[in-house]
Length: 135
Image 1 (spheres, rainbow, N blue to C red):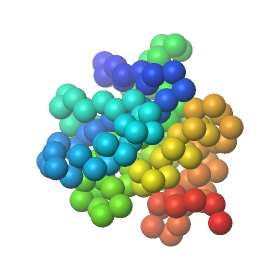
Image 2: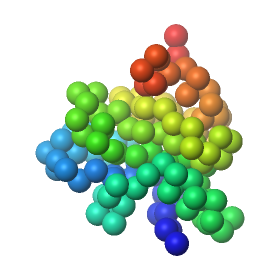
Image 3: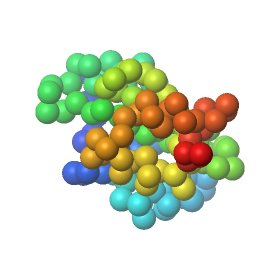
């Protein structure tokens, strides 16, 4: 059974699942660390899929459940904006949206205190599926 790490209190979990380019990871990880992200960069999570995360969370005990998680995947490493893959694990398990590191703090803060729902950010994503702020 896959056990997901727990983020620090009122912080969001960012799991690195692509280990193809440490240099590409340096910029977004520094930006995310400065915003208080609970960064986990462990090769055991390499290639983890959305479905595997949904399944792991569904199997977790009540105290270990997450409501959302951010992944640093291949797109994060190769796209100039380094967008994270945000995954809903609560209302619509498996629903995804992308969040650039410059928008991470807004999304993370609002989700961590349940001020807003994942759906609100995902619905505000542009046609490419990236949340760039509310208009």
